[in-house]
Image (cartoon, rainbow, N blue to C red; front, side):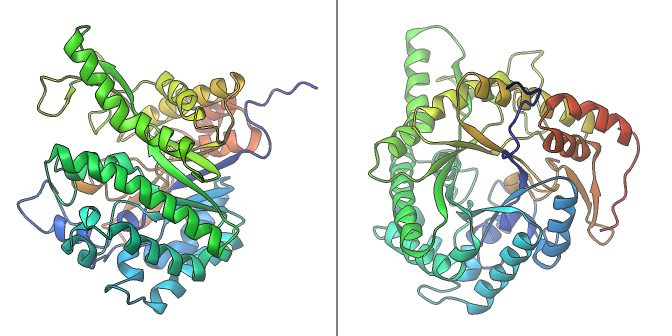
Length: 419
């Protein structure tokens, strides 16, 4: 039997958020303090976020109206465990209401236990280099899943462990702002161990399916010489291979693997940032990232070597120009479809991000969202034409449905939501 669909009817479609980036007022986290320290790389405070803490029910209804059947979000450790071993029933019940609202909209839940932020007290006692960091994280996971696990479909244990290690412990771009090559490698391995404990905690508390979500940039040497190739191989191991092989070789690495892809990076041992600027003429995003759609296809093939079903749990572009977002969506969805045709078991696509939100050290400048937010005017939600394009793909399973849906909305029209 033939079909003109690029994706099957049971394929999952959605978009993602992270608690600190959208909720607002996460004052007990390491990130809140990092944002308010003038010595750090952070450009501004997350402040009120986009007030998703109070608007989650309307936000989920909006996403469901845009054709989503899945949604990825995170719960905030700093709210749930405000002091060591002291758990907030109010915070846990808040997240029960959040997850119940998600189910009421018929959205499959992907719930991240750790999305970059940790409680300030955890950071103060050494963060991920403390000798008992993994055990402390496991304690939080167990408590959170005991209360929330019956409402969760997929558990994302740790978001982008390699970026937590790279940005926080080598580049100093994220908390704790350390630049130490020894700690960088140590933290990466600690986070892999934490993932394994989180998988075990999930097995003990719920029927949810646990998985690790990893950012997999396409890495290439900037020059074809022995030193550069060796440095590329080293970074390839520390940023990509360590995590895929760690999951594959674990006694229980989880039920699935999340692939997060944004860019191609050219590795340069002579660069203080480890990477070279993209070649002249390369399309780049507001983040300065090189757009390279086939990299998603290639990294899906690499991730498939872990032997688990795959979900694209983040993919998107920072741009003020929604026409660029439409192009990006089309090219990257075609890459996912091609990987499936080539035999890769990809079962869902979750766009980053659902809303324009706080983008960590870059603040509110980069615009990743399918839905704009007017933070100066009551946090009004404004779906962009790209959101309707993705809705058409989700409805039909065909990438070819994207542009006609966008055209019917009008790229130049400012669509005002009722939400």
